[in-house]
Each structure stands twice: as structure tokens, then as C-alpha cells.
Amino acid sequence: MLAALDQARAALAADDVPIGAVVVAADGAIVATGRNVREAEGDPTGHAEVVALRAAAAARGEWRLDGWTLVVTLEPCTMCAGAAVLSRVDRVVFGAYDDKAGAVGSLWDVVRDRRLNHRPEVVAGVLAEESTTLLEDFFASQRARASPD
Image (cartoon, rainbow, N blue to C red):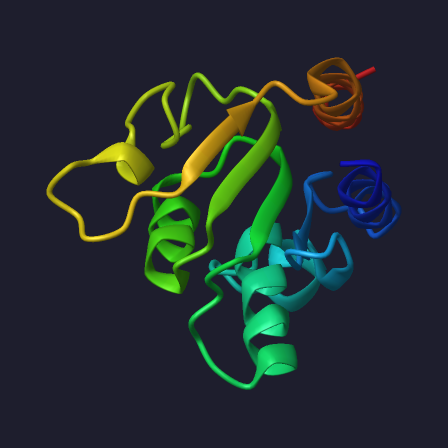
């Protein structure tokens, strides 16, 4: 999670929403990283999880990421939860809950839907306070910029 937080800080430095992700192999090695690039690249799919999963698939040379873990600072949205299921990661680890768009237990629970053929293990709340603080500080600064003086 510390590496994912580093990626979130990199997104923040690029003036994007500070969300970071890493994909970790079974032996604990980080095989891919990702951070939000929606603003930087003008890409609606530029979520940290998607960026990291794409890089992990490229590193592995195939789309199946079984045996590996997706670690992300914020609970994945429906798109990213779906990508985690479709990539066949063994587990999803996340920091802060997302009550507005979370799809790993908060608003929806895509990864545990019994109708799907793959259901990764979920570990929630890892370093949640650090993840939450990054996001709250970012959005407070965005509101301050937008408000008239």
C-alpha cells in the first residue's frame, strides 16, 4: 500500500485525483504501478487500477493475472472492480472506502457477485486514513481554487 500511496502522490503532483495502484506478484514483487491519468491524458478510463492492470498484463504477456494482487488507495469503482474480476487477480486490497462510487462493498459489490465466474478476495481499509487524507486535501484545494475571493 505504501507504493500505491507513492503513486497517488505522483498523481497529485500532476494535478490529478490522488489515487494510486500497484499489482503485486505472488512473491511480493511489484510488477506494475498506476496512478490516475484522466486529466493528464484526457482519458475517462485513465483510473489508477486500469493503468496498473494494463501494465501488469503487458509485463506478464497475457491478460490473466491469477496469483497476483491489485492494491489501490481508494475502493475501486464499477469499471475498475470489473477490470479486477476480468483480469482474474486473486485479491483486491484497498485503502479508503468510496461511499459515492465504490463497487467493492460500499455502493455495489461487483467483486463478490456470485453470478460472475471469478471472485477475488477483498482486503479493505489498509492505510485508509492516509488515503483519505490525500483525497480530502486534494478536493479541499480544488474547492478553494474554484471559490471566488
